[in-house]
Length: 129
Image 1 (cartoon, helix red, strand yellow):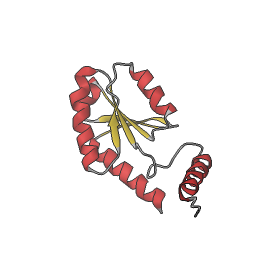
Image 2: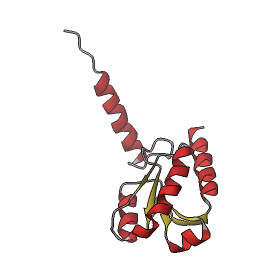
Image 3: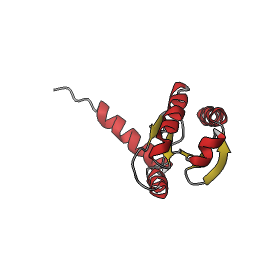
């Protein structure tokens, strides 16, 4: 019988990687880079528009469409160590911008979707070097 520990090696590698980063994977390695958090059901269509723009730019993104409060959604994204959270509500819809939160730092400001995409892409390429 030939013994191959190929999967065991990969599992050990990921365990070491997770331990090294303390679960806070860098942006380029994170399975979900951005989570969109609509403040309510009526902002869901705006969230989907943002989702399509981010996804077409090659950013791994998901929407939290649950009916939970925004503070609960933020807390869940922080616990799951999602690198960026994009919040869309009334103020953001009127300004055609998004509020951005970074894991561990909190609110970093409002920006257009193009500015946010440029920020994520820039950070992603800086981390890989």
